[in-house]
Image: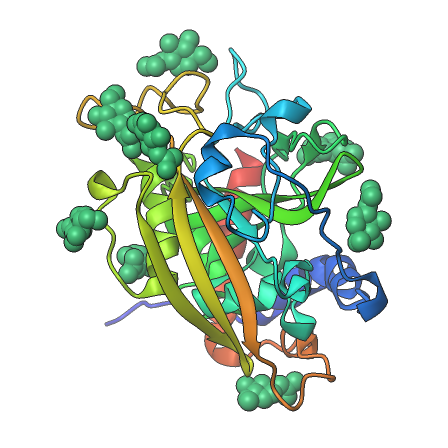
Length: 329
Ligand SMILES: *[C@@H]1O[C@H](CO)[C@@H](O)[C@H](O)[C@H]1NC(C)=O
Ligand SMILES: *[C@@H]1O[C@H](CO)[C@@H](O)[C@H](O)[C@H]1NC(C)=O
Ligand SMILES: *[C@@H]1O[C@H](CO)[C@@H](O)[C@H](O)[C@H]1NC(C)=O
Ligand SMILES: *[C@@H]1O[C@H](CO)[C@@H](O)[C@H](O)[C@H]1NC(C)=O
Ligand SMILES: *[C@@H]1O[C@H](CO)[C@@H](O)[C@H](O)[C@H]1NC(C)=O
Ligand SMILES: *[C@@H]1O[C@H](CO)[C@@H](O)[C@H](O)[C@H]1NC(C)=O
Ligand SMILES: *[C@@H]1O[C@H](CO)[C@@H](O)[C@H](O)[C@H]1NC(C)=O
Ligand SMILES: *[C@@H]1O[C@H](CO)[C@@H](O)[C@H](O)[C@H]1NC(C)=O
């Protein structure tokens, strides 16, 4: 005789609880206004740092090297002794269509682009852990991360909850918009993390792999991380919500050190006798090439409705149990 207990009707209650928790951040996100008059304008000038010399024919680099302005290409992670951080290993720029540099999902902004690559906001707007800080040499000094986006496992609404539990690719980012270097470029600290149960440490070679898998998601080409150099270049196309973007990617040296010193988790991340960070930054030059006819309406509503389809209620329950277990131990 089976003694299986009746399935408890908890998932819906848990779902509502989490949706309520999210409400403040969701309404804040949907309140972002779009005003074309405030589009970033680039300060143009002769580049002064050596690694750019070969690129002088380009109209502009689209970002400023943080180092001359007193900044750093490693973040500062909280509670690390000695202080350690993560490499800012992707720089997102646009010299032609600055609308894509705006940190929003509407009007073809950064978050819409990233949805097309497969990255979405954190699980139900929740953020776990203390913020990291970075100094982009723009006169703002060290600032908390703007936000964190995670690999969404093909589901922009809830896939990042899977990432939180199972681990995966993710990045924190900061915008270079201070008075001394106002490029509006977005600096991303990308890494591939282990599951929650493993304390969200970084997988072996996880900084270089996180960078190259994100670039691979743009190009559709599986990159061999042992084979990239400061002459590696790719191009790709990203599409989301009717917007189409072209992306040119150049790997550059001279910004990050090819080193493990000061890199968080540098005891476990290096592989094959190499450094935790290979010293290369993937610079993305992104342009919006197609704007859909319906562009004037906000597509943010899709993700801020608060509607929870029944089929994923079980996932909420699992997540809730994990959250509560973490809180209670
Ligand atoms: C940076 O540039 C943007 C766009 O031109 C402008 O709105 C903003 O005020 C500038 N910020 C600073 C600190 O100069
Ligand atoms: C930066 O983040 C920390 C921890 O995440 C928080 O305590 C602090 O208030 C934040 N600072 C600012 C200026 O928001
Ligand atoms: C896309 O990202 C996923 C998750 O990080 C990764 O497993 C996959 O290899 C990437 N695709 C390419 C072509 O790099
Ligand atoms: C290694 O890099 C070279 C030169 O960029 C390229 O031609 C080759 O396809 C790459 N090999 C792999 C396995 O990625
Ligand atoms: C690539 O790195 C080498 C040192 O490994 C350096 O000599 C060369 O100038 C760099 N090339 C570019 C285009 O940055
Ligand atoms: C606009 O149209 C595109 C298809 O061209 C569609 O993917 C997108 O969801 C639409 N956006 C809105 C807000 O209706
Ligand atoms: C890790 O970085 C610290 C400085 O934060 C340094 O003292 C240590 O030697 C580094 N470890 C390795 C294996 O490079
Ligand atoms: C980084 O330095 C290691 C030696 O520690 C070298 O094998 C590797 O080729 C360098 N990587 C790049 C991208 O220059």
